[in-house]
Image 1 (cartoon, rainbow, N blue to C red):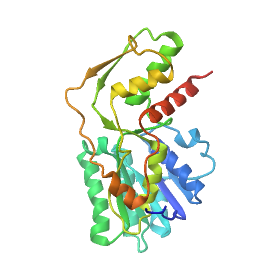
Image 2 (tube, rainbow, N blue to C red; image 1 turned 120 degrees about the vertical axis):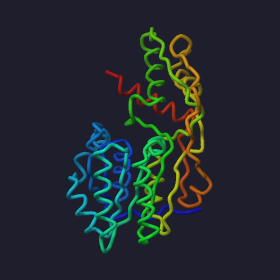
Image 3 (cartoon, one colour; image 1 turned 90 degrees about the vertical axis):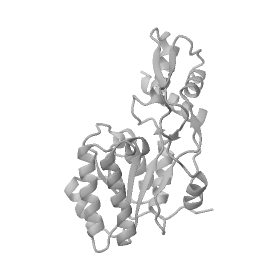
Length: 287
C-alpha cells in the first residue's frame, strides 16, 4: 500500500476561499506547508474564515501568485478551477508562469467532474496541464472530483437541500414540501477527505491524472431516508422526489487504482456523510 507522500514546503492555492481550497489549506498547513492563498473572485464563500485559519496564512493577489509560482521550486500550485471566467483566467496565468519557470513547481489542477463535462474551455485547460507533463516533463496532474459536500459546501447542493428540509420538518413541521429531481445514483464524498487525496496525488513522484471518488453511491431517496432519520422525522409530506429525465453522467472512477497510487480511501460516505451534513446544518441553525 502506498504511504503518504511528502508535503511541499510551499502551497500556492488558487481558489482558497472555497470549500476545497479552505480544507486543503488547513490540511497542508497542519502538515507544515507555508500557505499562499489566492481567493476565487467568483466565489463569495469565506471558507478560510469558516475554518478559523484566515489570519494564519499568507493571502496574496494574482500577480504575486504568478511570481511565487515562478520563483519557488519547492512549491506546489493547487489550482482549483470552477470554470468561471475570472478563476479560469487566474489559473491559466499562474500555471503558465509555473510551467515556464526554469525550476518549475509541481502543479495540481483540480476540477469537479460535473463542471468539467459541460465546459469545453475547462476541458482544454485540463489538456494543457496534461501537456505540461507529457511534453515538458513537468510534475503536473489533473485531479477530477466526483460530487462532494461539506459544512462549507453550497447551500443549493442536493444533500444540503435535503438536510435543511429535514431540519425544518423537525423544527416547525415544514408545511411546504421540498420538490427535488432525482439525478440517479451518484458517487458522493466528503470534501474534507477529498483534499487528502488531492495532496497525495500532487506529491506522487510519477505524476498521473486521476479521478477521485468515494466508491459509494447515494440516490435522492437514500439521502432523504438518512437525513429524516437523523432528525427522527417521517419525510412524508415534507419532501417529494420526482424522477429525472435521465441519469446524470457518472465519472468513471477506478477506486483500486486510486488507492494503489495514493494510499487514500474514503471513510465518510453513505449514511455517515448525510448525518455529518445534518450535524452541520443543525449547528448553523442553532441560536
